[in-house]
Length: 153
Image (cartoon, rainbow, N blue to C red; front, top):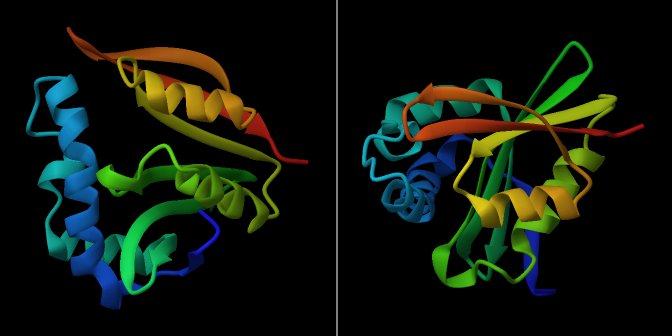
């Protein structure tokens, strides 16, 4: 979607981001039969505090926040997290644009992220973007995290 504008998202937009995050993660909660996923139960205060230490890039369609991704750097690794797109706009390239923007806005040599093992659309997106699975981590029966990395330089 060429009319989507990307830019930094600060703590002032925490409420709008929390609404978007919850909407985007509802399908994940259904997929894993778990309404207590961290992204679904994160409080506004927790998100505001997180935005004070993480970089967040937002995607807007007009004045509507339709996507976001959060990143932080640690020892040459760009940690990518909470890539979210409004459910009614998923599959239109917004997530790919956000991921690419996060990767371009760093000097880190490697990007790393994770997603749940049943989140096949997420895994496909990441693999199309050059990420490769490194390991799986069993969180509890029925949930494994798939850890993926990508060289950036």
